[in-house]
Structures are given as C-alpha cells and as structure tokens.
Length: 332
Image (cartoon, rainbow, N blue to C red; front, side, top):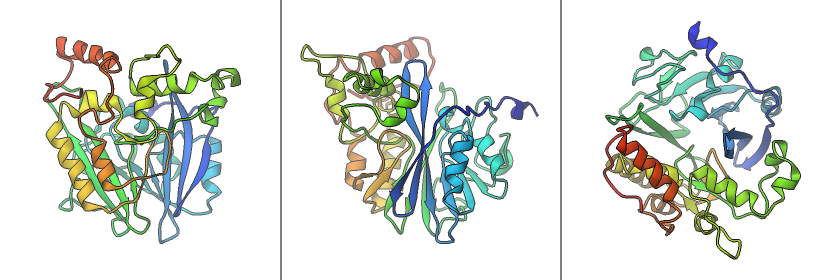
C-alpha cells in the first residue's frame, strides 16, 4: 500500500507526440522538465509477428498517450522497464496497471523509493507485478519475445554508489533495429527545438537561436560556453553524430570502464544492426555496430576542457565527499 501511495501522479497536462518510425516501430514522445533541464523522453513500441505490441520504457499514461496507443489497434503484450534511471521508471507502475494482461519484464538492480529488484522476480518489492528480470546473457531465463528480440543487459553495482546501474539493449532481428534507452544518442543540429517544446515553452523562446543549443548542453551537463561569434562549441562537437552523453561518460563510464567496455563489445559483436532507436533526442538514426562502439571512446568528439568544466566540478564534489564509487579512468 505504501509503495502504491508514493508512485507519482500522472501529469495529464503533458503532451504526447506519436511518430511512425517505420519497420513496425513507433515513438511516443513527451517532454521531460527538471529544474533547468528540458529534453524529449521517448517510449518505443515494436509490432511483433503476433500482431501484438512490445512497449519499451513507458512514459506517463495520460489520456492522450493511451488514446494514441489504442489507435494502433493491437493488444499490448509486453511491457519493458529497461533501466534503473528514475526518469524512465517513474511511470512504469501507473502504465502497467492500465494493461494487466501484459507481461512486465524489468532490468535488475532496481532501488529507491519505488522498491527494489535483484536477479530473480521473487526478489521484487516493486509496486507492480514482475513477470521476469531482463537477462544479462543467454544463460539467464529469456523473455517470451526472445525469438524476435534479443536482449543484452548491462549491470554494475559498485561500492560507494547509491545503487546498481543497469541498461538493457534490444535487437529486433527482422528489422535490424537496436533499441537502447540512454546508451547513445543522435542530437540533431537544428535552427529551433523540436515542436513538442512549444507545448511547454512560449514560441518566442523556442524560436530564439540560442534556445536549442542551450537546451542540449544543459541536458547533457556540458558547460554553457559561447564564442564571440555566437556559436556554442560544445554543441557543435556533439551534434549530428552518434554520441555517448557526456554526463554518462563523466559519471558512469569512468567508474566502471571494464564493465562498460565488455557490454559495448558484446552488443557490437553480437548484432548486425543498421539503425538505432533511443529514448532521447532524435530517432531513428542510421548507425553501425562500429559507430556505436566508437561513441564510447575517450572524448571521441574532441570536446575542449572548458566544455567539461561543469562535470569536472560535480565529480570533484563527489570525490571530495565520498559520494560515489572510485574513479578508474579519464573522460578527457
């Protein structure tokens, strides 16, 4: 009862945009806002051979969202919580209650106010039914969609961190599509922000030439550094390419470099994908396993030390106050 009570209320004023991604896949986008960070957050849906729907990383189940999903005229067969990140799991419980006949498969390592989950579904204290834990390898129990969608789950639990970190990658074999949540992104170089920003910000602000670059830099925690000519160097370095978000490179990868490299290598070697669908920024985008792997190199986009300054400062606070795991590598 307590767990149910602390689930967040569904923000019914939040707009949902649906896009046909081709190859039987769909995106349901909402706008995530937290303090000075604003970014799109995406639920992805794949139509299975049965005609049913595989729903990955559900967003807030507003009336508009559920109506757009119902318009696909197909039963929701499976719900997937692919990460431990709070912004992606906050509405899984409310969404799952809308589809009690769908199976619910969840990444291991859940922790925090909504409950916990280990490597077995019986360990769950989450406020919704868990039918299975996403597999880390072929040796683990496989989900019912395994014949169509393969799964590889990154998992690490480091001493000193608040809790485990997990993210599952999925490969839809028929369409050669890689589905990830936060692992990589494609940030488009645009004149203005995507239209969904107009549902939460005035047109005059969205149309400002600096609004989109600043939104991008704030979302990935790079410093707001602008040159005399009005350009944003950090933004220029990370747009129109496959990119690992700097905040993840600076906080996660340097604390678990071996585990990160092993998972990235596994994904790149196992699956011959030709496009990637993610939970943030633009999707889908064309990409090869080689490009996916390259995004995890050390500062592969050549960001200036000044662009990393904000993340450097935050890491310094973490280290000085023993708030996180030991740093084992460099992101510069």
